[in-house]
Image (cartoon, rainbow, N blue to C red; front, side, top):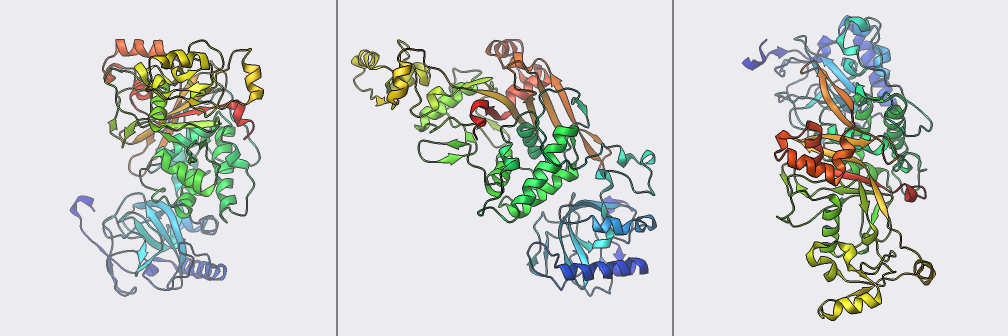
Length: 567
């Protein structure tokens, strides 16, 4: 049948496709589900409805219209040999495939399991929309939410684990004869696994986190947060508190044992492991569409870090506000061709009039771009070291004129000539001289404790720096990550793409890849970046990784290892 003809075929009720053995298994499964009340979204038993989500509401024993790709049918004979194992292993969040009567398969994720007409039924959100299917509602009751044309309701025994993402092939399908089973295994890893301290043999294909169904925003973020740094490890081990969700332990376990630990131990996380986390987030957070739609990293961080794991906000502002990441809001300076994150951050803080109330352990900064297309500057240089001394409220600072301990701060002086925030720190003597010719400038005192003041009056005032360890980039709605592969100053950088290659077409799977980028440290230096700019005035002339780093930067991750030790 040619799909382009859009013919609609008639198919009898799915119950008639199930063999007697399968009917018995179906009845037993339904009985078990009723006994355990295994019903999800919402938590109530559904007793009515037809088996397939089609436009017609005809009697279930009569013929009905089926989608153009074919109707779900009973599993092939070879499937039944392992059906008990397969059914016991399928739950909400499982990646499954459903055979059709035209020898094609639907692929999707189980979003709901319950009882419909005394039949154990799975609600599957398909990877591709199909004419005639719905959006997860049944007879006025919403069982789950997905895009129109993607909700398929089928008897649970008709679902089989997606063969593209299984650890080992079933006994009847040898691995060497099936292209689906060329992926590395991805076992669950318990316990405590420290982050990697070097790239080692991690570079190559089938390394990192495997992308699947618009997951690049999540894959790149998780890879940046956990592969080579422990700054976010408190999220993996914080004990539950009374205020936490009832599902807190499961979310934390899946993140730790099925994503982070396998990534650190084996260097590979398969897509079905990540889909478990995506399904939990989609069901438990107020961020919709996390299992199928294009999202941005800040939406993922909001759902996982803020809502479900209830982490303490990374940033605390002098205004009393708290945040997990900081969005740069600045006006474009036409005289600047390659602004650095340091310049933009200081400009943004100066404009907003707020400061950080304490030194953060991690600082996640969103670039000044809006949506996936508009960028305020065509290129931005991620500063390898971020000087946050002048961004911290009442942190001891040196006078910008004489170098002694500053007691006053003048925002107007700092703004003159774009000198930077450090130009606003002044001792009492220098303040009097500076403001003698600037009667309209108003200075505010810097509250430094007498204990520190006595020490710092006789020694240089230290600066506080944070180190860049990851950059997320976006181009045409696809996220990738540059990540520093260690904690030393000269540690090399790698490039990660969860969908770098693909095996098969419509029903294939993505191949993630990690590549060492030895030149990246040079590109991050101001001299190296300006040399690139001079040699390649147009983006298309840049080396591909440099173009992504400088022209497509979306979010920069900075860390303060000293502060992280105490968090």
